[in-house]
Length: 269
Image (cartoon, rainbow, N blue to C red; front, side, top):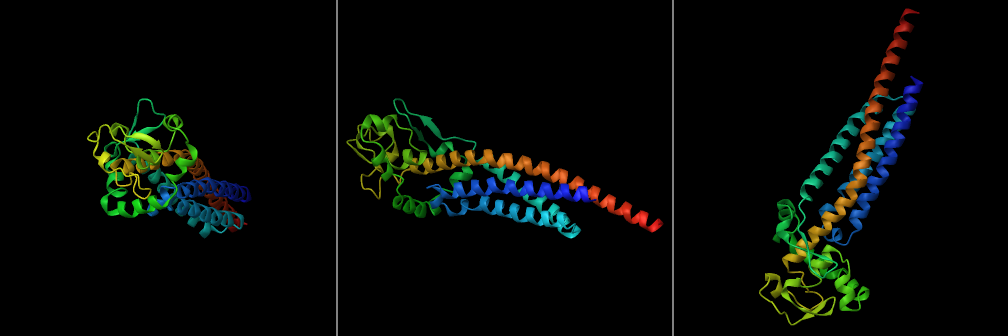
């Protein structure tokens, strides 16, 4: 029984370690400029990681002092958390699978169309009900002002690999034919009817293209890119947690069998 309990304790410590990349991924996602303006997608991963941490510590205590109630609680809660993590990963993969980006000839960056993203992202992230607050938040951030410090010439800017958010919100669409003055100042559109966003562009720092559909698409492009990066770490953590959980279940069952056998022997002694 001691061997099974020690094994379960070690496994719970491994599960505790798995909570670290989950929490770190959540904090990284929450710290991104776009997620600072989308509050309800900032903390779910962090919360999930903290719950894994707490449940793992509970399982460790239960295994170390052999508290069957705590161990049973750990196994039940960990199964729920693993299911939630897998659900989150599948959901994130499905809603971020469509990519609204397209290459622009002669440019190092890509541009984005909102129609190219999933309907869920369009309807829940950048719908008209939420966009007013998100737009105001983006206008107050330094997302676009950073470009003026990073790119001094047109050639540098056109060859730059700017983020989807900057591509959509900080400049007009290339099809409009605006002439470059600075990363956030463009004049004399050669093709103002090329895209409805051409008329929404403004050189005012608090306006720019924040009212453009390309800005909404750029925000979704950023979200997609960030969630794809975070998912790599979350998938690894999920695989390890599943392995740990299966072995822990076997160890717990073995410990119960050993305890039952010990009581049986004592009854015949």
